[in-house]
Amino acid sequence: MPRKKETPIKTSVKSGNFRATKKGAGMTAKGDKAYRAANPGSKLKTAVTGKVRPGSKAAKRRKSFCARSAGQMKKFPKAAKNPNSRLRQARRRWKC
Image (tube, rainbow, N blue to C red):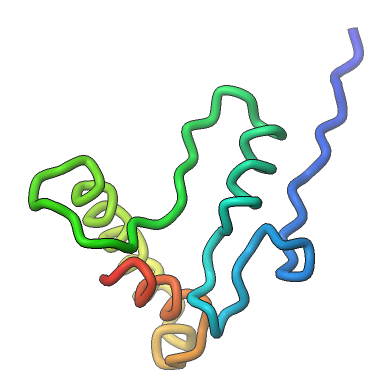
């Protein structure tokens, strides 16, 4: 049985699936929906940007993202030094 070809999610800002770097980078709600449609069963969620109670699920997601992105800061020092890089902007949006 031939495998079904997957249509990849468009990663451009123009498609509306991702925020522009100046607006904090990361995925939009539209992009989140598109990803879920392309990947049934996915539990992808958008950024935790608001105020959260310590120990809540959202606080744990934020802590996890900040830890993962801190590793990327080490791996990509050029992006870490540039305050306008997508990595730095996303971390700012997540309040890392």
